[in-house]
Image 1 (cartoon, helix red, strand yellow):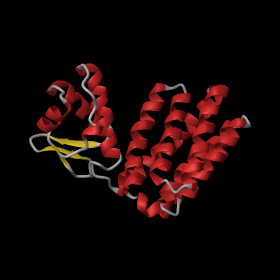
Image 2 (cartoon, rainbow, N blue to C red):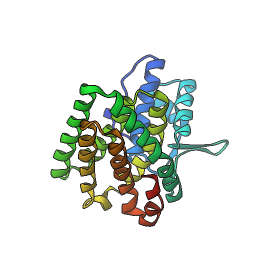
Image 3 (cartoon, rainbow, N blue to C red):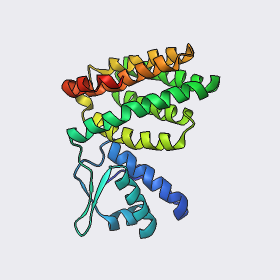
Length: 230
């Protein structure tokens, strides 16, 4: 497994380092440095990260729970494949939860939270205009993560992160096909405007449409079937 040394977390005690290793592996998987179906060797990972086997296995179990890797007893560990049926099923669950998080965020964010969202949207527009697709993806991710945080509901936040990670992998793997489609990110400006106007339920409807628009790019029939969730 040959990865850039710069991406390897610095040496820290096992407990803190475990979080670093988790974040590093998650990024490698989501941003396609580790490809779907690629085998992972537990011993090589332990040596690379300088992490003992028990905390490493805890990291791997966490990634497995999040559908990012598949652990096959007596067969090994592979980066989870991405199939279209799983993506469609995740959107069915994700849209109602994202809308709930948006409504809660609208009620609980306050001026500082709304200012954080406004800054992300401004950066997102700048990245889109510069055709910086990687940055567009990361800023869209940041917007969703911030909504989850501002919802004030940790259970909801963690559930959404797990669901969004799978969608994010799919988006990143197919980003070349989206080169002319990043205008869909403009809809987040409308979401923000509705929040600023103290209309969280309208914002939630726009937010659901924003999320569904990405599915519609690749699977218009499946997206049409989910329009009732808006």
